[in-house]
Length: 479
Ligand code: SF4
Ligand code: SF4
Ligand code: FES
Image (cartoon, rainbow, N blue to C red; front, side):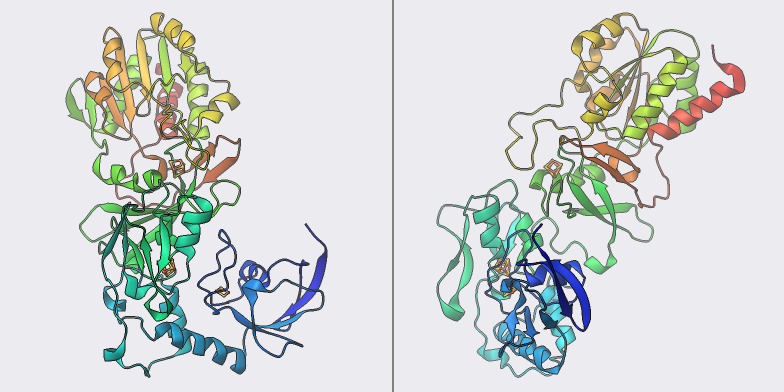
């Protein structure tokens, strides 16, 4: 960090690194500063002029996104004069903007709408008939829809494709007030991170085909989670809604800023993986081919463990650190073996040199921390000496579970999978976003999330199941 200097913003003395951007200080201090084109991930472009501030000693207002901090600088973001300047710039933005708010998906999280409301342009000076019109429904590819009329030409989307993905699919076409965003002939928006432009777009010009017209955003509730799609462990928001008489439904995953892990972004596959959470959940326990309640299934699992035969626990690398720790402690009590072997969890075609990792599991580093053996040799040796196999988590084996049919197979799964039909007992469990826990990502960064999702009928996590079994053990029934 460079030299720290003293500045004054709105009469309050503060310190900031010399030469750093004034807008970053304003944003870091949560001082309201309207802006469209600046984004901390993309840097400055200086095209929207919305971030104007007054700086003592300067004749004219300055854009804070291109103003380096100097010692002794005195800055004002509020006041009649500077607010009028920003209001006039906003009026320019609105000249050709359509009156779409009631039907626009961005309503409720739109910067233009927010700034309009605080500026109080309730009586428009614009002639609606004279507005320029442009294409309302341009399918850019990769689940992104463009409404050219709503665009404020901030170029965040263009810079994302140029500087972050380096795929250059988007550009500004034509000139002056006929300028629009578009793709180049024969080159749709098709990179694996394309949907981030929807989050970057400060207005409703870029919307997600997947989310369009499904929900008004002010009805959604949000909580934090860690994506389980690969070893990067991107930080995400889970937006969900429980309507009266209906199940709680997840409507979207969105990236949550963590500069150490995923920055501001996530991949499209991780973003769209929420569909699996609504469509493919395993919800009803099965005991010997018949449906059962969860308590009975756990009691049956206990009865099997209570026989004193050798048991092997096979753990999925998407379980939380706490679940793995508790499982290891149960295995010690039972003198059982424990393996982290997971043959289906690497996909070389998925990984890249940005966020996506070929290891499709979020918590494999926790295996290392807890010294859980992941080798095939250990697993094969253990399975030969065990009568029972308890598979914890999906995709450990998938259809290969059939190979263990001479064993008693117990599966604890969050989603439907091919293994279930081979299990003597199958118990449903909470999915990753429904439980609190710690995940250690591929770079060794430990991240703890506390789930806030409320369910009418919460499914147990592995820790809940283990506690029930430990309770039965304490009652003196075991071995
Ligand atoms: S489409 Fe959105 S992100 Fe792209 S330039 Fe227009 S307003 Fe900015
Ligand atoms: S890069 Fe990995 S962790 Fe991040 S969103 Fe994609 S699948 Fe999820
Ligand atoms: S945010 Fe400063 S000019 Fe656009």
